[in-house]
Image (cartoon, rainbow, N blue to C red; front, top):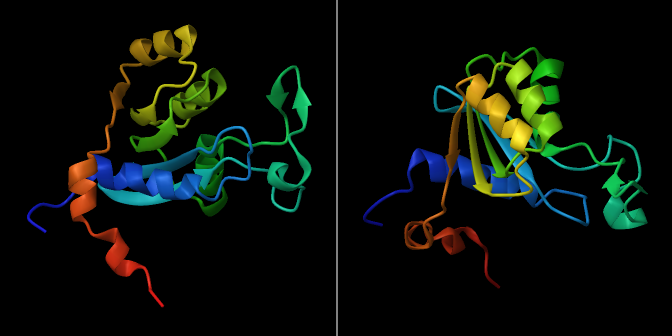
Length: 159
């Protein structure tokens, strides 16, 4: 391997890996919270621990929204709260642009940088709040060639 993936791709891949644990049938989302180039929490969208999962019992929809699902960003923030880890001046890497409610929560939690992979119903008011609070917003692209060079398949056991 001639190069290694950059920090943004590294942390975004962590979010992508977390998304693979999602129990939502509509959209799999993962989030990684980072401070000083260290992962402090991760989350994916799914049900409250111990509740039924959408993948097993379908989504519980009210007004077109699944009320069973906790968003990935919220799960990551709640993990920090549960274990007493400060999110002040941290960055988040999330597979999809945060919804308005998650954007407001991230701002209140002290997140100063939001990195996202895909646009997803980017809310106009969320954008206004991000600008108001001078939040660094960046879309991270995963470079296929660089990721291919990481030889992730070398870590998969073959028969």
